[in-house]
View 1 (tube, helix red, strand yellow):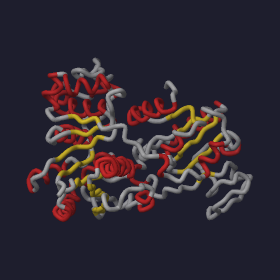
View 2 (tube, rainbow, N blue to C red):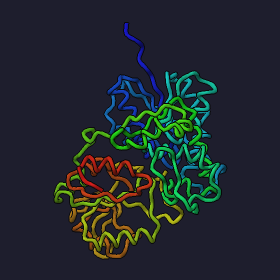
View 3 (cartoon, helix red, strand yellow):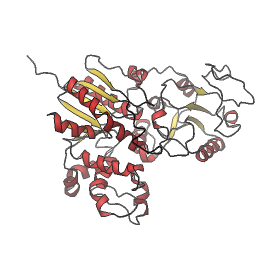
View 4 (cartoon, rainbow, N blue to C red):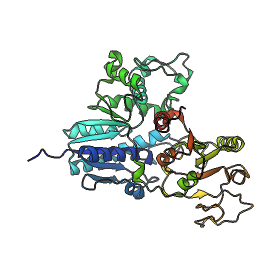
Length: 414
């Protein structure tokens, strides 16, 4: 008889941006290592279980199960303007009783938690005797900064990091300019910063950290994490570079209207513009970007969300609820009386729902021959893999390694 099959539980914190990499990891473990994986999804009221998204992953049903944790009400626990990291951490905290039941039921041999659900490890340490790992879907640089800032810089530096005159030194890693820190470090008086510090400390309480990176992508940072004695003494746990983890384009239906439009464009001529599953622009930024795209005469695919003047992460839980999002017809409201219920625009042969009143007047008309404006969500991997795409405009603080990976795939230097 062979040895019993290993069973791993993987916890995904709320939000599509966290669920997708967890699903990719579970798929990798199942397909390449014959490991049974149970994905524990912590849902939110504004981000319900995305059944369509789950269907897009062609995974062996015998090897992957999904357990959905019901949404919790945190409205009386946080301020109305609480940052997204704070919201997610409170959701995870309030969901711990249900997560405990799930773990007791599925009885995994080991548990992997994503970068914002580390509080589950405290539950595991207290009640379950199993190895526990943290999965960081971003990169090694973020991991080093998160841990070192939480355990060292938080004690050594007074006041705001952005007001600190000197660069922030992380042993064995590239120095960090104060204005390049992650969003959670921008305001040390915000509750989000307290959660950031807690998370960084809890990473080092695991039995190992799985990072979506690889040696060729972050050689120096990985060397610092694994060989620099000063940094190793802070990190303490084993680092496992397991990347690159990415969705297989062949697993998706490539016959969609965006890709068909890209098929008609010259090679490397299109700029892809997207700010992530939770990234939004202010009204002023939205107008400036729209004018920039228009005046540049550049072909583009722009994934646009309604402006949010309350912060860059204002749409996190509301983004991408419908994977087959409708597109905006490239026509202006004065010229086009398309009803919002319309599903096809004959002029463009594209799905449409009317016009967007938060873009500059005339923008859709003037750019109709140059670009696509897509509401809320788009198949990013498929778009970036297309030969017509030659540029990627995004938030570098969140997407650094994504951009680097894409540049290697399409052989373009950014």
